[in-house]
Image (tube, rainbow, N blue to C red; front, top):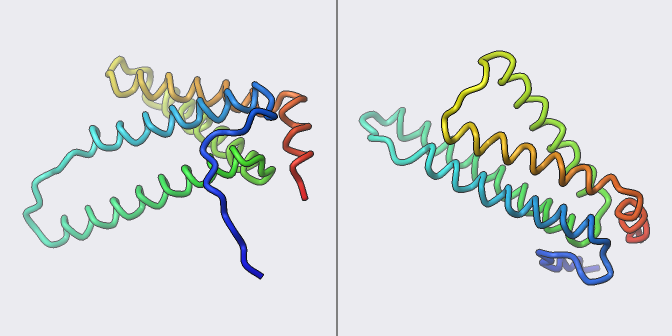
Length: 144
């Protein structure tokens, strides 16, 4: 038995608008996350082998996270209920860690932090779109 995976980046026309909007918002926040990592990390000067090893490790971990996040969004576009649950869990985790950081360190007006807060707010709205009755019904109808 062969398993085929279709790469579906956006849901079809029979998908409720709330689920389509949520997927679009998740793709946008994924892109913002990717750009923020590229700008925030940059290319530091490596002077010792330990720094090179640490940079390779961090790059590998960030790449794994980004690939998993993109795969989850693609499966969300295909109407997989597990992807919806993972997306909601990750959204809740991001909200909790952001709120903790805000209360622990206080608000900051740096551009990167403001963009991060806007991304978290957008993901919160996307998560709420996934919880609407029509999108829940659509996800449950896709279970085979």
